[in-house]
Length: 231
Image 1 (cartoon, rainbow, N blue to C red):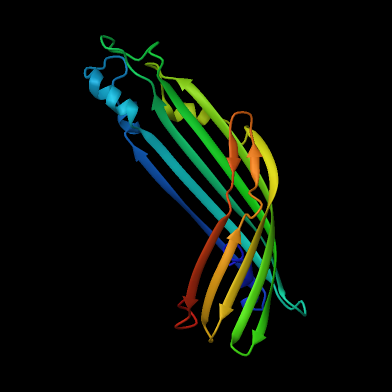
Image 2: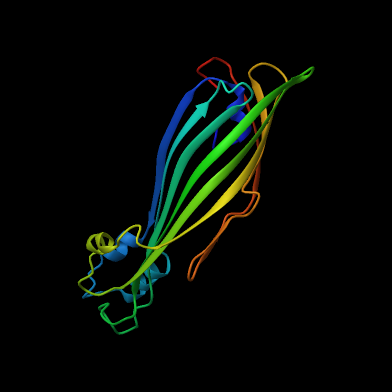
C-alpha cells in the first residue's frame, strides 16, 4: 500500500513488514539473428528482415516496506523499491551480395535503466458521519542510472560473452525526489475507494544523451474484503 497510495497505510495502525518481487522477459527474433551462420548467410533478405524487427526486453522489480503505527496520531511508513529495465537488439543492414556480417555496420545495442525509490510516507484517517476519510503524503528519494553499449557484429560475436563484459552499474547516475498524494474513502466497513496522484513534481534525470522524465499520474481504484484473507 505504501507504493500505490500513501493514504492506505493509515487503514491499520499495527506494525507491518511487506515485500514483493517479480519480473518479465520478452524476446522477438533476436535469438534467430544470433543463431544464424554469420560467416555464410544464405538468405540475405530474410536476415535483413530479422534485423529490422528484433528485440529483447526485461524488467525486474523488488520492494520492501515497513509500516509503523502507534504514533498517537497517524501512521508512518518507509520502504525501498528497485526497478531495472533492460533492452537489447541488433540494428543495421547486410548489403546485397555480401554473405557475412564482417564490416557490414551491423551493431548489437544494449541499454538499461535502474530506478530506486525510497519513500517516506505519513497517513491519517478521519472518522465522519458518512464514512472514514484517509489522507496520505509520500516524499520519495529517487536514484536513477542509465547505461548503454554498442558492439559491432562480426563472425566471432557471442551474445553471452558480450553481455558479461557489460559492467552493470557503471553508467551515469542521477538523483531527484518525488511527491505523491493519496486519498481514500470508506463508506462501510471493508470497502475502500482510493485516489492517488503520483510524482506531482515531474522528477527528471538528465543524462549525457538521454533525459528520463517521470510524468505525473492519477489513479483510482477500489477494494472490498470478503474475508480477512481475500480482498
